[in-house]
Length: 43
Figure (cartoon, rainbow, N blue to C red):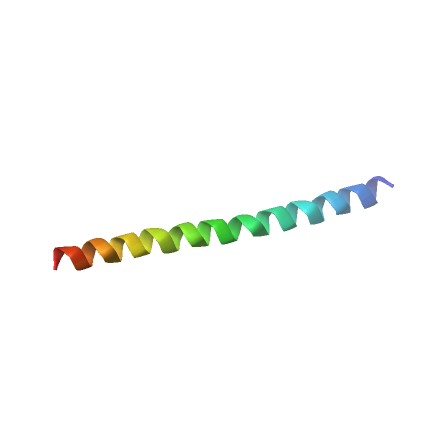
């Protein structure tokens, strides 16, 4: 019984962490776009 509960918690944790990757990737794209906008305005 404990083993099934542990496996269930691990699966839920993996699903939760996979959502964080999308958030970090989106933040990286926003920062990149802001850097590109600054570079274009300087030219």
